[in-house]
Length: 248
Image (tube, rainbow, N blue to C red; front, side, top):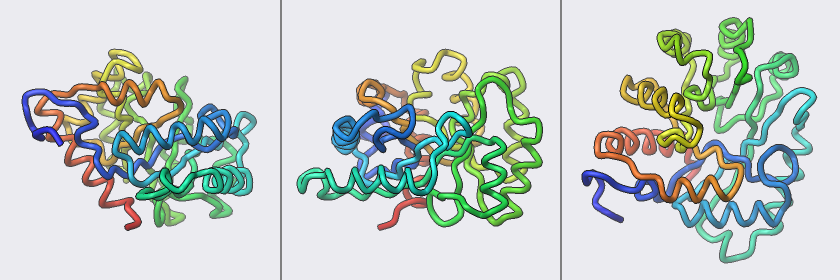
């Protein structure tokens, strides 16, 4: 591994034995991997990047990706059956979900029928167009049901870019934040990168993930260079992610 805290370094040098809590590697059930061959390729490339444990998190969105325990379980089993011995060695793959905060989610929450990252951590997301009108009520309800809400990629919600203080409100309500690693670059746009740095520098981020959908994103990650200050903060976040979600 390259010296950790040099002036600039590749992000991938911090990812050895990483626990990736957000990715779309299961085949054919959302906007991530389209088939089993692509799933195997993504897993291979992520393993080469340093990922040791995977928590696959396919979208569950009402009317768009109406996944169930069964569809996710079947895709997960298909992946396990197709891993060869060499690829399987040294890695662990589990499955959960990334839940859109919609009416379907509320029903699942009431039934306590949620696929969690580990223990009671549940990965949630919002529309990029606008937040749910009842967002705060939903977060309170999630917690009252005994779950811990982890908001996926908060830096990508443009409607908060001009209202940065609201991120602090969400944190005070008990919402954990998961940053997408590619947000450390301008991959999603300059405003997303700027907001990501804002959240990191104010210690509002709890966990990180790749949110991998395709091989191009992994290539971008493998070439992503960060500065010393960011390296220090990212190492802490990576360690916290690993410590919280590792099953080893």
